[in-house]
Amino acid sequence: MIPFNLRIAAAIASLLVAFSFGWLVFSWKNDASILDKEREAAHAYQQAVEKANETGAKLQQVLSKLEENKFVVTKELSHETTLVQYRCNLPDGGRLLFNRSAESPYSIQPD
Image (cartoon, rainbow, N blue to C red; front, side):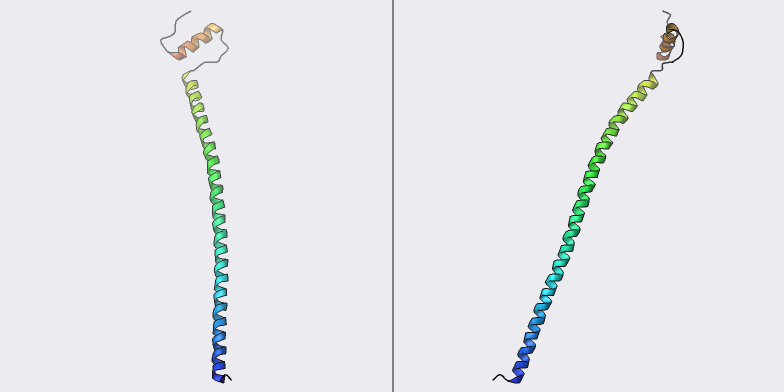
């Protein structure tokens, strides 16, 4: 027969072992839930980065088109501001005279 003190010691030891294994399993579950949350957060962050990159690429395309249009508009404005043509109801001779006077002050010559 096993003495009573030894039975109590064995029961306490088995309770301690059970408690420590329970604590270990609880910590594993807790760590697994934290890891799942971290993975979800990393996945959400990755999706946000991809969306931001797509938006940035679209904005870059729009910006490049705007830059091209800016060049065209600036070129047209420069052309229109340097080439002054008076639009009026003059006969062709008077209109041509006005146009030549706008090109250079020394180019006015009668036809």
